Image 1: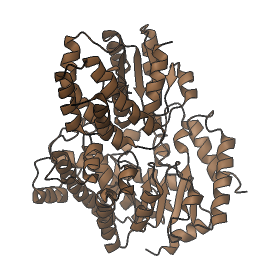
Image 2: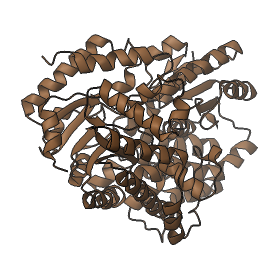
Image 3: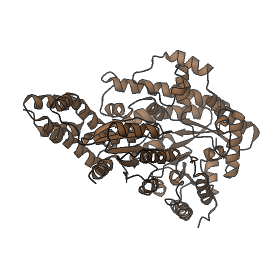
Image 4: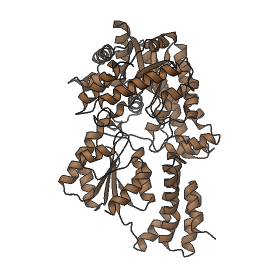
Length: 209
Length: 352
């Protein structure tokens, strides 16, 4: 019989078919959907995130694990919705205007989903106003701004300014190759994450303060 | 060309950034310049003069070949930057060859004509530039990482549509790049900068490589080996640039391409890499120019200190070395002067 630990292992291994099959079996056996999510899928992604932080696994392994979780979520999500179970926090994420790079942003989005944040991914080249509109529409707890290029860092500041000017109360988290904690402070962001795994920890901390 | 030329430049203590973008953005007509071969060539020459290098380094524009392919496929220009394939493009390879022989884009043409201007009108070494096949392929796809990982797990194009898409796209990328390089070589390029920044630990799992996967060899080294052959046939040298995060094993494989110059990102420690890189290859780099925008992160004094340390350490290990930037030095709005000051510091500060 399927158990939650097997589901967790399937996510860690990036076994898409296995994760989907086990999710179906667990639900059919009457396992509470919240347990399938928290003790199976999220627990698996947490292990992957911790290993990523320690350089034991790399971006490809994280993506493959996230893909397995995503596939399993297509089975689990309708059940969660039916049971009225929603993520406690919603996060908006996007790469700032002028920047088309999305790997870092995608990785953070996956890690956040893996940590059971509701994630709205705005894509790349996102204008300040789109961040504002999305944060207001989804009542976001967190807005994540990503930038790979030094040339687009000023756009990050413009997004922060626009969010503050619109009185958006979401916490603003920034990340990307050229940015730093000092830059986050300089532009008035609430937090900075040096990598995708840390982005989970920082986001969790920000939403509880 | 005689490889000794680059070894001599290194021995003479050449320092230079890849800084054409900085000079370009001092001009009010920067946007027009990138599609005007004559003006672009003048910027390339001015950059070489300002940075006191005989190498006429072009703009590191990694979008040229992608835009060219997409224009051939009829994708509107305004979609070129963001366009990505979810399924293999329906294209006859022979028709692609014909289109590559007969078409161009304004930026490609300007790049080629800039090389020609340098070759015809100056004593500088004309240098061409292209994105590498693997990196171009990653720019063409919505998710390039998963298929590479799946291929690294032993799945083939027949097993997995995503692997098939990547493999097809890689073959197309290679064709477009070869066509771009042929034009630049015909215009007089004597050295080509091939940029493979995606050859790194984000796209290729070091764990898979350690487990014996040949995916780095298949997807990165083999296409670049064919590119290297093209350069060899025309007596053109390879300046290989990879500013991505690399493992030592990845570096060992890259040096098998035998570049005349190897440019690495700031994540590498060049004096340690000297043990991996043959002394016939000049190491280039790798000051953290992506952070030059911030006086807090990289004050001038720190850049001078890093310059002295890098030069000193490379002398200790006796490896041919040209001090330079970790990547092209991009002009950042509002920080142009700060960046230029640090470029000046890396060029002018005493070596000891």
